Amino acid sequence: MTLVIGTDEAGYGPNLGPLVVAATAWQVDAPRDEAEAVLAEAVSRAESAAALGRNGPLWGDSKEMYRAGDGMERLERGALVAATIVAGRPARSWDDFERLLGNADATETTGESREWATLGGLPLPSLVPEPRLAEIADRVATAMRASGVGLVAIRCRCVYPGGFNERLARGLNKSDILSETTLAIASTLAKATEQPSLIWCDRHGGRKKYAGVVTEAFDGEVVQPLEETAVRSVYRIVPAGTAADAWRRIEFTVGGESRTPVAIASMTAKYVRERAMECFNRYWSSRQPGLRPTAGYPLDANRWRSDAAAAIAAAGIDASMLWRRV
Image 1: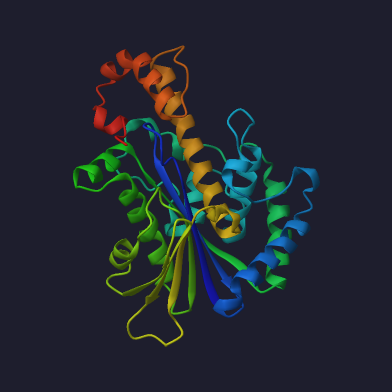
Image 2: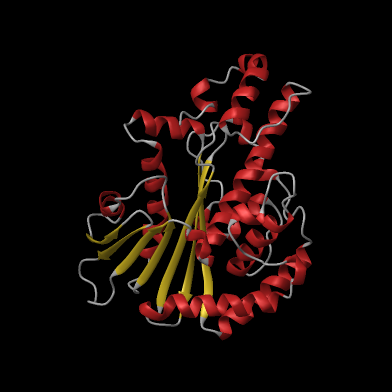
């Protein structure tokens, strides 16, 4: 049996809104060297069982599954089907989503400001009927189980501007913050078992060397670099006092979303961020009617900050709680 973990982020580049990092964990009934092929075959069968036809695929890179202006139905469907498989039933509200994921709190916050306070009350699902989510999740989970594969956990963390800026003040850079947040989630999942594990991450910005941040996240376990190239960085993590074959392999790969565990992490992170920005825009438009919404990316974020200057001053929100320095 092998544990496979996939991680990804949404919101790495914006000035407004949270950096969101997510991870998925899978049990694969196969040795480590065979786990990737077994998992890929299981997901292929599950996609067929989902019977989405021209409305498919179910899962993929969030940049392909969602584009601004096209609506979030595919993004919500993929993220909430995954959550339904883990939880055994669909979430019925955002708070329920968090509870169903146990300590996976989808909106755990650092440096939270008042704009995000309404996130917990959002209804779920909002676009895909609950019976449809349950139907798809049952088909997909059944097909994967028949292939010896199970999606067993989803974890997600939001770093809001206040927490992001506090970490910058401690001397971290943007890539450090992403790596620190990602590896905290991945190490918690991996260290919950002594099984051999594979950890797949999308590349963190332009970073090529990860041995130091991996060692820190895994509490000083022995980290051996296997490959550090322009497209992939690979390490072996050797836990003390475990069986000789229980080591972990972690990869940071350009285009990592081609692997389904990473793709679902990408979709989950993007879904959480988009819903968070809905709350952000609703809050500020209620304080300044007519204020155009923003996705938070630099050019439009500067436009929004200028347009909203009076409302920001009236609200008394410190700039460090609102504006991420990147």
